[in-house]
Each structure stands twice: as structure tokens, then as C-alpha cells.
Length: 421
Image (cartoon, rainbow, N blue to C red; front, side, top):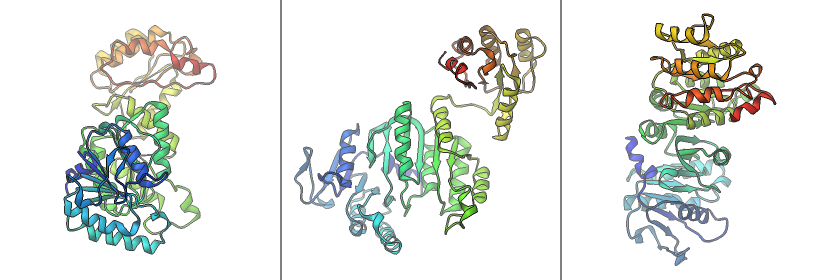
């Protein structure tokens, strides 16, 4: 099915909340609060047979009595009523449903499987798409849509986050709030009865509002479609993945659908995804992706005042599948005119440990004029008295705002103060 079929989920014009509530702590109460508290401009229609209104919004007795057909529905009723609710929504022509039934997590495994089978059977005639059941729901900050159980909203941005973990969903929201980082989409897949990673990746790969994609993956149940969607997405956008369990499966055999870690590692590599080992690393990478300009090529130059730091940066670049920028004759002459004849070639420019601020600026300008390098500037290492030299890269950068470049500092207590320059 075409990824455009998910427009009802990600770009709805109207939303119904089936099982809306005014009881404190109820799932339907949280969803109504988040929908009404955001900046979503479309109608929000609560379906609650026993209520006349919620916060001044008229409630409706059933799906059939809604005044218009919503694009999206959020189902907050008990698990056993979900299949029939999906049938009713399908008959009305609703395109997608986020299923967050209270009490679902307490069901036994077989009861969950039975419910999921009945959900798919109920949805089949109409083709309504299902996110869940369970999980944390969905946010699309750009349109003010918050169909989630989160306790905070999110800022609009160009990065999508797709999680199999409810706890990481909320942790990422909290982290992004402290950093002022925004998202195009944030969603929790839940038990993936219908929509899986591949469906979401297909959509995000062609979404013009999404520039990069972050994944948290515990298990993949649709390996072939996952690999196909990942390859397609990674060709156009940075695709980062966290997959826990590197060491756990050396102690305990993996369960059904879990697979050995080395299998996932190879699959991620073949798909063009970058696997990061820790949540902190994911956050660091996410911040870089959120703030950096996109590269128009895969060549990078390294500018440093510490030769060893430059070599390690180059190693990291090459290990990650990147390429060092080849300097043409004009760039080489420009750098030699600034630095003398002894700066290193092959994509690493070593200014020397005593580089002054003006040298940073001149070297950076020479690199930014180079035709083939997508530039990365490595900032001062601790030996360079970086407290007084932090303005060097900044002075060169101010004249070259149209070129992508990043600064990195290795520091201890003293040199760390240069970060703010």
C-alpha cells in the first residue's frame, strides 16, 4: 500500500476520540487534554455516550452520530471493544486509528494475540490503518497534533523519531525540551499489529518535512520489508538506529523474532543505517542532525590544531563510510600560503598547536572555498589555550554561513571554557 495512505495518520484535518473521558488519569482524558492543549486547528470530536461535553466540547453518543467523518481516530476504550470500534470507524470512512486501550498491557499473551487477530479482521474490509495497540501514541508538532500519552508537547523540527519503547519516547521528549530541539514526527509503534517500521520509514523517506530519522529498535518482525524501506530511506536521509541487547544475547538465548545481535548489526550496515551504541550517543547525533545544515556530498575536510586529533577524526570518518576531501591545486596553494608547506594533506589540515585565532579564520576560509569538500572544522584541542582562541573558527564561519561545517572541541576543565566563544 502506498505510503500516501498514511496521510490520515500524519496529516489529519479532523480527529475523533472514541472513549473520551473526564476522569483524572484515564487514557481518554489525557488524549483530550493533549489534543485540546496543542495548536491543532481541526475539529476534535469526543465520543463518550455518558457525557454531554468535555471542556466545552460537545460529546457524541457513537461514531455513527459524528457530524463529519474524521481522518483520524484515537481509540481509548477497553480492549474487547476495539475490534467493533474499528468496524464502525471503517464504515464511516476513517483513514487511520491510534489504538491505546486501557488495560491492554495486563492481558495474557494469548489474549493479546486473539485481540490483534480480531482487530486485523475488523480493519480489513475498509483498509483503516492501525498504530498500536498500546505504546505512547503520536505527535506531529508542525500541525500541533498531539495524540499521545506524553506529559509535554514537542517543538516543530525536521527530525523524525520512531520508537518501540514507551519510556524512551518520554525520555527523548524531555531531552529535546531542554535542548530546544524539534521534530517532524514522534511516534511509538506499540505492538505493531498493522503499521510497522517499514510502513513508517516508507512515509518518512518521501516526507519533505523530515530531514533525518532516528529509530529505537528492539525486534524486527518484517525483515524483508524493513530492509527494503531502510535502504530507500537511507539513500536520501541520515538514518540512525539504537538496538539494545549487544551483550544480553551472549548471556541468554534470544526469544522468537529477536535474533542474534550480529545479524542486526550486518543488516543495519547493509541498509546504510548508522548504529549507535548508547542513548547518549543517539542524543548527541540527534542534536547534530537537528542543528547542522545537510551535506550536498560525502567529502569532508578536517581542520585541527592537533595532528593526532585530526588523524583520529579522519579514522572515525572513514570507519563511518565517509570520504576525506581531495584538495585541488588552488586549495593547496591557498592553504600553503596561510600555513606554510608543512600542513598535512589527504583531507587533514594541521595548523599546529600554537595556532592563533587569525590562523583558524584564514584556514577555514580557504577550506570553505574548496569546490569538493563538504567541510568539517575540528576546533582547538586543550594544548592550544582554546579559552582565548574559540573566536577563531567563529570569525571564519561568520563570512561563510552558506557552507556546512561543524566545530568540535576536546577539553578538560580549563579548555572547556572556550566552548562558549
